[in-house]
Length: 134
Image (cartoon, rainbow, N blue to C red; front, side, top):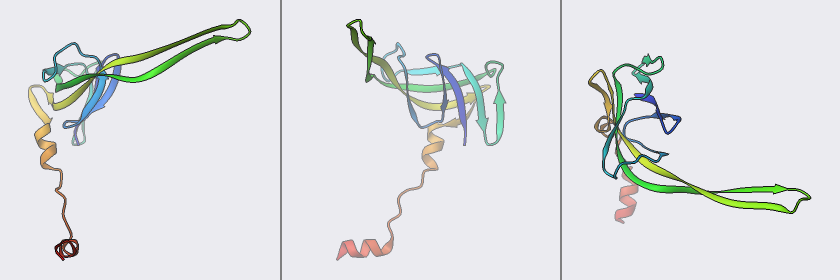
């Protein structure tokens, strides 16, 4: 299993190809390909590359799927015995980001096509198929 640890939006995220992640807002249009070069660690079949602070030549490529706003957070401040109350809400802008591939020194270590081939298809037992036909 291949994965990488990247930095985006001031946060570190462990990413794998073929999965999507909700990250801080990226100011690009949806369906745009984005390359992230702030990669802290790359793990590929037991071989680990650790950067100081970033891995040289490592990139993560992905596609921006859509932009949306996160769940509402209520911020409530109160001073007891002073009759002071402030209630304020906040919704963070987020981007859904699909990871396409993890690259190291120009070669693709893992991509979305690799992960979809290894997913097994659903197998229907024979006795279930017979009861459905009856």
